Length: 283
Image 1 (cartoon, rainbow, N blue to C red):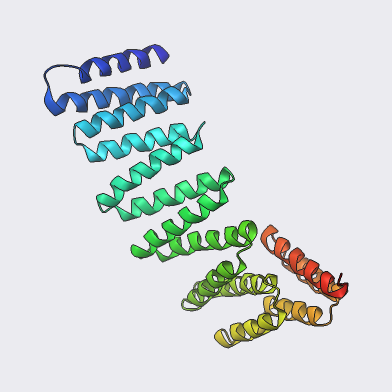
Image 2: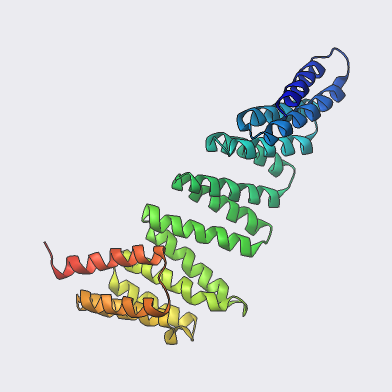
């Protein structure tokens, strides 16, 4: 397909430089660049495909065809994603400006989430956090509450695991727990949000405050006191009060036997355990 791609790109360049044709020549050139990009994509020539799609977007801009500009930029971003996350983010960011200007806030929300996922995969956690937050804001503005919650939970996870901003994470988990309780279809998830929020409170190094927080959780959800999550949190606080690392380890092990702890909870529990150890053996 390389020969066809080169031929189509050459024709697009010739069309765009034609003396006559007005805006229609740019639209036709854009379509030719898109075809060239598609041919490059078939051969997995991603840099060439990305460049062709960008040229298509530039031509469609001259033709004042906003929908086609957005489509071309999206294709360019998908091609850049194969070899340059930075350029993919650049294209998507520019594309989102057009989506917002056009009032396409759902599309903007999805775009922000895509950027966040790319940055997270690339190890840029600060950037990922910011874009997950923006995605959540857009989704909430469009009353897509489930999608907004999913993005906010990613914000909380990144804040806790990679920034050690346990206050931000805890506030989000507590907010999500309260929202979950408002709907009988989601109320079952409140206990996990409360567990994560409680662990973040503990990770802030204040077992007294954590005990008060756990009591508040029980006041907000009258069923929480009977859950294994609540019992684990209380057992951890009791172990901390006694500076008893063995008791801490035992209650965590017991919980893990029934409900496998994920990486997030394990990481925070290790931090809490180390703080109890430090209190048990102060230097």
